[in-house]
Length: 277
Image 1: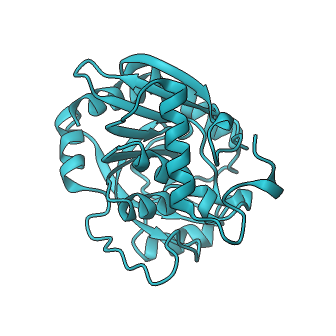
Image 2 (image 1 turned 90 degrees about the vertical axis):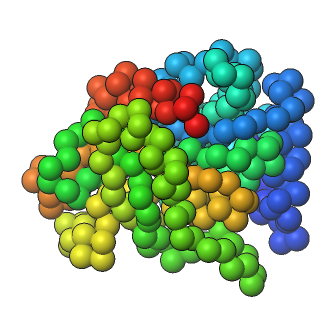
Image 3 (image 1 turned 45 degrees about the horizontal axis):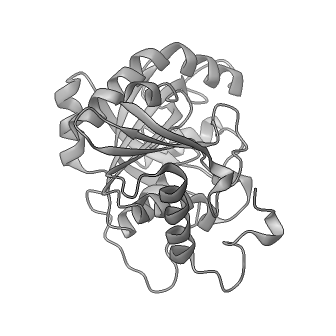
């Protein structure tokens, strides 16, 4: 595991895309798979999907790959897995997400996405567990992300890098997902900085500006994926209704429990969607 003081992305002269290229070389060497077609980041509640996608070719500790650190959050497994689907596609499953609230900087938050692109992946599937703003949604319900609002006041883009974010969460991919499950609803994801949950007033603010889902990940990763030229598909598992919408206090235990209860159903759905991409 890279120490914070020697992490390759923390040096003043670090070149994030070169670090990602080295990480991709590490993955090819450690897994024996020189190219991946699709990358999938597994958030809270989505972990079982890796078992259903296809044949696992290799599983490696993320800490053996340049730039990756041990996940700080319970529910994230800390491995990288190469899986071959029935149709012969290679899927890189990322179980080692660095969250913005860990305080390591945006480069480390989006390193997994840039690494996935460097392995050859053209599609990035981002999943998370999040709070729902719509009262009609229920805990355990999967929702497609149609767009996002980034409230971190940060960006993975550096310098004069201007990237178009129109159709960031590709309609083409959302249509494929709905061909698998026509009942899937969708909404706008709002990324807060965390790690505290949002206040009821902040949830109402998100609702007022067009947000339907509140959470602490995904938006920064999606921007980096678009910069890297990937198509993005986003899924949120509604683990609870957001503060003020839900009348009882929020807890991380509640999020984990909702994810565990929903995991068999949503994982099977995600596996079918991955096969169709």
